[in-house]
Length: 136
Image (tube, rainbow, N blue to C red; front, side):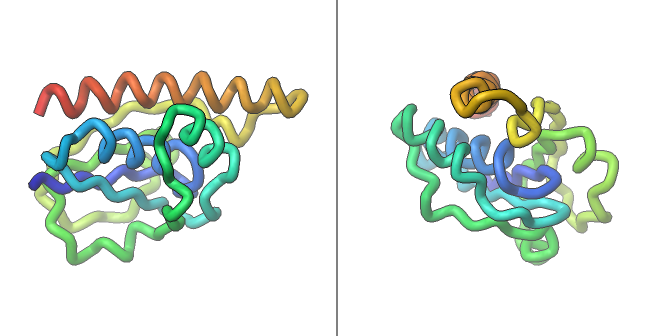
């Protein structure tokens, strides 16, 4: 089973969503983890919009990248430019991928407008995760 680490700034939205979809689409071919260069807690809106699509990440925790220093990952995916540019050196031979997604936690407007931004980013991440798994 291939191991994938998804890395973002705060490990609260985008990386959590990507982890959920990678594990969902992988049919036990990969084991996905997520981490941040900081930890901000899992965003309740990320949990909500994934639940709308049948993916349960309620049990996820916000983890710091240092927690995974001893895990031999096959792939590392950064999902925001900040994490790609500011990630501390990560001792791994993992093949690296980068796809930046907008941060839905920065959305403004009504509750529904903010949720719609989360849904838009969720759908973009879903498409990327599906393609990633299918290309393995």
